[in-house]
Length: 147
Length: 236
Image 1 (cartoon, rainbow over the protein chains, first blue to last red):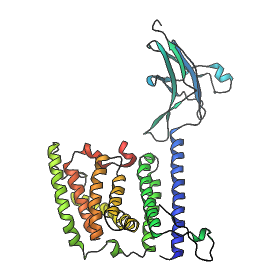
Image 2 (cartoon, each protein chain N blue to C red; image 1 turned 45 degrees about the vertical axis):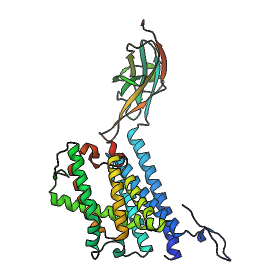
Image 3 (tube, helix red, strand yellow; image 1 turned 180 degrees about the vertical axis):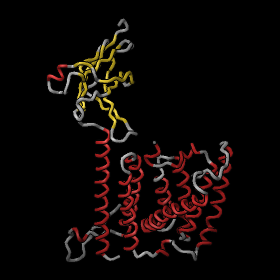
C-alpha cells in the first residue's frame, strides 16, 4: 500500500465517519419533527380531588380541537377533546376562539398524594404512529377517601 | 486501537506524517464497516413509515470502504475467495458442520414440538427462487464477513483462534438483540471463519450459509427465531 494511498484512505475513513454522524443526526432530528408538534401550546392549570383542568391549542391549526389524555400516577384515565370554554385563553391571544379548555372529573382514588399529567395526542405524517406530548407541568394533589 | 505517530530523521510530526501501522488501520477498517452496518440495522425501523432510502447511505459507505480497502491492499477477487479451484475442498471441510447443524436443528425442533416444514422459508416464493435469493444474500454477507472482516482480523491478530473469534463476535453482535440468532450466528461465524482461513472460498461458504438458514427456519419455532428480525426492527 503506498503512503499516499494510505493517507487518502485514512481521510476517507474520517470523512465517512463525519458523513454517518450527519446522517444519524438528520434522522434523529427528522424523527423528532415527525413525532412531535412544536406548535402545540397548553397548560395544566389545576388538579385536585374534584377536577383536573387546563387548556391546549395547536397553533398550526388554531381552529382544531385537540385530543387530550389524562394520566394519574402514570396510568391512563380518560381521553377527551379540549373543547370547553376558556375565554381567558382567547383574551390572552393564546387561542383563536374560546373553545380550547378541558376539564376531567377526578376519578375515585386511594387516599394520599397523587400526580396528574395531561398529554396532547399527536398524529404525525405517518398514520402508523401517534405520540403523546405533555402539556404544562405535572401537578401533585391529595385525595381523601371521604371525597 | 493504537496509532503510531513517528517521525523520520529531519521530519517534523505534522499531520501529513501520521503513520498508522497496518494493524491499527485494519482495526479501524473493521470498526468503520461494522459501525455502518449497525447504523443501517438500527435506523431501519426508525425510518420505517418515512423513508427507508436513508439506510442506503451507511450501506453504500460501507461498500465503498470495503472495495477501496481491497484495492489499496491489492487484493484480487481470487485471493478474497471468488474462485472455484478450492471449492470442493472448502465444501468437504464444511460438510460435517452442516450435517451436525441440520441434525441438531431437527432434534431441537422435534423436542420443542415444531413440525418440520421445508417450505416455511418465505412460503409465498418458489423454493428455487428463495434458494437463489438466500444464496445471493449469504454470498454478500460472507463477502463482507470473511472477504473483509476476516482478512482484516488476520492483519490485526494474525491467523488463528483470535481472529476467528473476532469474526464470530462481529457476526453474532450484528444479529442482536435477537439472542437466538446471535448465538447461532456466533457459532456459524466460528466455523466459517476457521474454514475460510484454511481454504478461502466464498461460494462454498455461501452455499452452506443458505442451507443452514433453510434448515434452521424449517425446523426451529418461528417464535424462538423471532422471524429472523435483528436491530431495532426486532421490537416492531
